[in-house]
Length: 346
Figure (cartoon, rainbow, N blue to C red):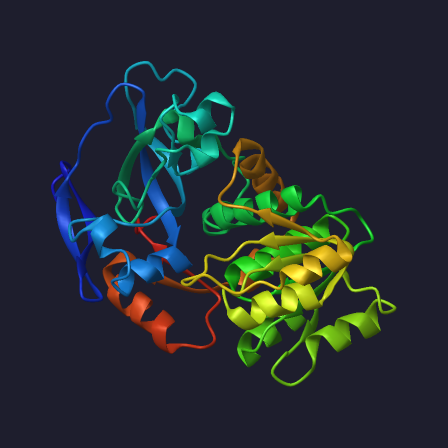
């Protein structure tokens, strides 16, 4: 392939991706070009695949945001990044002049652009992004492990906002990729963590990672949590399932003064037991994405081994096989985190 062309995976609608050549574009002022090593497939990417976000992404979009790579080129005005520097991208581009930005909450900007959804993303060999989204990595980190930093940053944000204290009892409802990462970050912070999950394969992964697990399809979850905590309940609960039974469980299992963190995006408005909030003075905390400090924390946890990356990453496919990778996630009950190897020599 000529040096002025690269491969990119375009979402074409109807559960179809097309890997095609695309012209290489040099970064503009204030931008950098990142040579992508790996890109993870997240739940939002699967929503795109299923056609649930067609109105937002259209049929010419290159998606992807859970990535790792190295600086390939820098635009004018970028002075603190060098060619070859290993990096990850925090894929949020804020407007800088809305009530949220003016209050210092740029990560929930009223006009936020999520890179890889509202713009082209990382399922291409070179990705041009604003330089302010870049986080430098130590040279020692493995590039496949580094592709977990974005979802680990989600978990770091969730745990930070929960105000979890060492020794508290934690319940994670939903043992998918984000649920497992939340559980690992919560354990790293000193929490006594239990994972609730109905999928036997995910339960097996959680148990391999050393977590106490409960299958609420077989065991009364509230009774089990009460029995394990001296009839107290969980001090911190993360709702990561996105289901009505998960919402029912989050209030039923909460201790007095418990903090409930709503991590999942629910397709429909769930019914919430507000009486339980009154009766036990519960607190509901909304969490959305992450901030700079969450990315730095995620990098340090990955480097220290606080997240078992080799167990979390269950399969890796080349960019040329992206169609099969997405289809396999639809049909396979065993996968936890799937990566796309974007550049062959990564």
